[in-house]
Length: 211
Image (cartoon, rainbow, N blue to C red):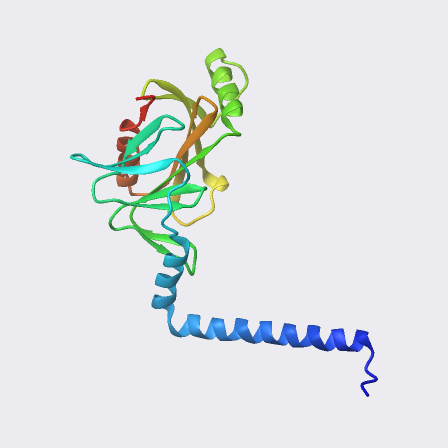
């Protein structure tokens, strides 16, 4: 007959679970250390889910690939030779051919990355900030009014201590309200590397709204 109390049994089960978890972490760290290159490729595959957000679809044209969303009423061109990766209902990453990311140390190695996302909850805030800029009233100094395909958009420019990452000069976030949605285009600009800035502006120039 087993006279071990239930509390003692539960403690044994908890100890065994913790022991297995710690061993799994140690083994994982060992294999990560032994196969750094392979693990970086594996992490890339894990994060690159390859599914466009709802209502976005790709069109092959003579000028390249166009990403379009009829529900929002927006389309834009993927830069030539760039790849696009969807992350379920969250966002889309556009990556230049030479783009490489170190998933172990969470930093860019080379190339350009533009992230595109959409939301139904932020457009009213953005419209309010745009109106403040137009009226010259109080608004954040890092906010600027720009035009995207003739529509008002908010350009938010982060720099200095507000950024986390190596060699990043600016973080640019374009907030474009369209109807009941807001579409965001964002990218990092690195010191001594203006190519990403140029490609980002070229991508914005391809944006088409309501057509």
